[in-house]
Image (spheres, rainbow, N blue to C red):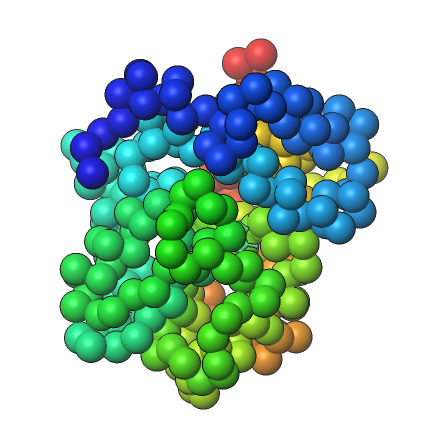
Length: 268
Ligand SMILES: C[S@@+](CC[C@H](N)C(=O)[O-])C[C@H]1O[C@@H](n2cnc3c(N)ncnc32)[C@H](O)[C@@H]1O
């Protein structure tokens, strides 16, 4: 697929939504969010509508600015954006220990950029699952209720997708169910650090802005995601415990994040 141009961007806004209905869809989408007076319970109860409206509205922007993979990636000096994105995808494939011929599931696959790259890189057969009709023509399914029998896949991964789940335990349980016993699930998940204070107005505002701009029903704390994985049946290995990063790495990450907060605050 070639890179989307400005015309593709403009004509694609709204996705499957009738062009005359786009403005009212924007209205409805915004009203789901705290930023516009919306409630968390409403977003969770209507997550299919909320998240699908979001992706119908934003997919052409994503393709224009990002290409075929819709996720962040840490970028090294001298590396292009596309190279850093591919490296991030290869890293995930390596962490999963994928072997040629294995059956792998990509949960929330977007328009399939990571799926194609990981399948080529690891010589595996990757099935993509997505509940947004505009982004996908086949394999349309909700990750809260997957159309696969149990024990189907040798590996499962999710890249910045399960953050859209209204209930993380329900979503991870589905992943656990379709994964063969003893096999691995790897994810790049969106989480908040423990520095989030639910009574701090500024924190509330930042959280509401991120939810609005990314179609999220709620952003969970890291430990809530880890607990949800355990409740679903998984044994959790963070990279630090797997020996990839030395002990203390998460503490270094924490003080670097503090520095970023200080730099942003100092620049105001
Ligand atoms: C930020 S995009 C990431 C897409 C892809 N993983 C990538 O990195 O290019 C999140 C994806 O999750 C999908 N998604 C959100 N909620 C879903 C659900 N309930 N079931 C299946 N897919 C879902 C969206 O449609 C979208 O494709």
